Length: 358
Image 1 (spheres, rainbow, N blue to C red):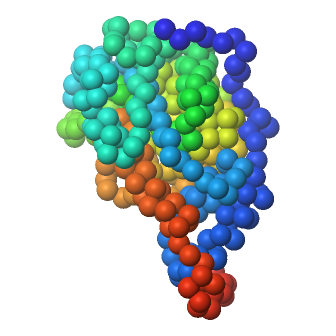
Image 2 (image 1 turned 90 degrees about the horizontal axis):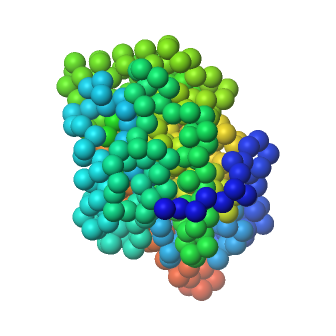
């Protein structure tokens, strides 16, 4: 069980640092000097430059990678909004402790260490525990959690980010496990974006047409009952969110405060990123997207955060698998950044920017 540090606070407006512009400029100069077509690696070059600004050095390194997976149950599963029941959450959570999940297997290939956290599974599990409660309430019958529980879930994520920073991790990845969490993520996104869930919520782990309509109606009704305030992100989390969403929002916030790049996974992670950015504007500067989730709300959140996914594989597995899949691309990009000779080194005339990158 995590020891909770009362000194850790949730950041707010004005608390998120700026990027280091000197490091950004030095990184950009290095890219322009490399003997290849200018901007030839596209947005992957931008990712390295962003990481330089985040960490304050153009000597970019992400050798030590940590995936934080927030695991929690959602009371709204009682309403039949998922193909499976909540028992699956605990089974998969315990499989993380054995290295037998998709994210764990992919992580071993990509050099990513995986840190599952039980932040709210409905039973006791075998993984690291920082449990807020044994699952949230059914948001169709009562608010999903108290405001204090919402704050505690965010603080749990901040603690996790700080813990990995102390252990020397250079980049954080976000993932989750929790049956019903595409419903809570859709609800959070619907309120924060002030849009109907019709265009944001999808089939999750495989709902039928009737199940999808039921899911959207449950979201509408819950929002109508509790009227979460779009101007108060913690109120939104408390009334229609989940502990995993709060925890991941905390990872984004904690990463920003610790000057660590944090990689967004899919739709649940994106909803948490949106929440974090509403809590503390500027957090988006520290977030890297990974893939374009198959959930319909993903593109809408990316546009809101002014992000563009690197990978378009229609993935919707969760667990942080999309974030892990980005790591080999970034590693290869960094090999070019570090090891390619400059134009002088191969005795050819340097390319010159002629206005625009494309």
